[in-house]
Length: 97
Image (cartoon, rainbow, N blue to C red; front, side, top):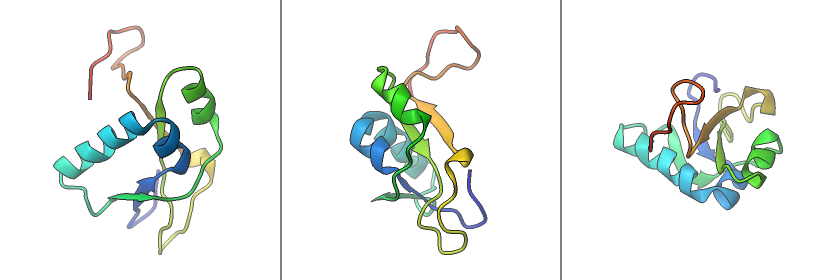
């Protein structure tokens, strides 16, 4: 989802519309020692399918490189999805983050 020296800021719509899973993902990254990669500042806004999924009632956050000195923002085709409902295989019960 990112190039060399990628930094992941909060994606604007994810932080606005799905704050709980977004904060959970960034908090977990901090606890794992990735505070230099997951920045707690709002980056760019991405208009893609995560907006529709969130509007359907599944809060979803984009993890996408933005504001990178080395590569700049990436196109929305490089999106990684994370949701409050995560499954290891389809139709299994969810586990919490």
